[in-house]
Image 1: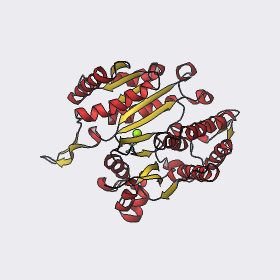
Image 2: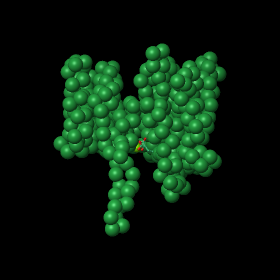
Image 3: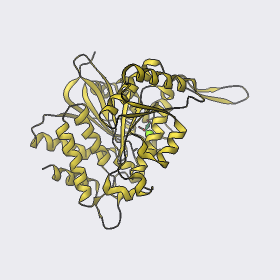
Image 4: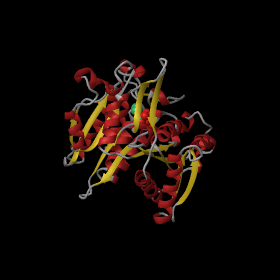
Length: 368
Ligand code: IPM
Ligand code: MG
């Protein structure tokens, strides 16, 4: 058993814009250490395509062990067209999936909040998105992402067959549903559970297990079941009907990208991937923006660092119980937006366009 070291952060900037956005978090960590006497220990290493280029593998054992002993991993983004032809098992994304699976980070929290200052940045009408505050809880270590059997197999007459398996056990469903119910209690007390119980047995089991847990432990929370395709539609029609959405790995991947656009930009949304607490009350966790590596804008200094900075705020809240610091970091982001500073992805008329590092600096100056 590898012990978790308190307050140890592992930064894995990864590929594309990853190093730029994680660079801003690094500045914030240094600032907090210096000005708030916090004693975060940070280490930084390679994961994703950059690791493949250097070591021939998307994550080395050494880096993986560093992740195991860290209280929180902060990941930028992995992948890009450069690695399109790399063998499947060595693709940059495998680093991310290995970390999620082997650190047992089964609960992925993806908040979609529409900042009042950015209501205009959404492609939807302001009255639909204004005041939006949804939490998507995505199951992260099961379902079709990891199910066996899987692979591409030759069948007869030169035909091939691609196989993936979608499966869930009762306990996998209940442990993530429990996270959703607990979160709902601190919010608007409503959970919507999404699956395709009309076509998938695993979806039917999902519905039954969530219902069962609700009856046993969470009767005081309002629970609705919704088919995932309907949920996709309702997210555009009337997103404010939702509080907490709990769903499986694949539906959660898709619904969270969709929800992000309600808020204006993929560049704004953080996420936290959490494991179970051990006997000492410690938990493994990884924090990452929900956006990808955006190779088209990498290296230009125009990426929006807010999603990664807000992911770090989630780390302060969920891994370190530093609610006060998390709140002030989130407030600093709001203040900077109120001042009219915008990165390119969220620029609008009358606002001031700033670079990635100017955005980070402005947020730090609000922390003072
Ligand atoms: C996400 C991403 C990942 C996923 C990719 C990069 C493997 O889209 O975190 O949403 O599919 O889970
Ligand atoms: Mg995704």
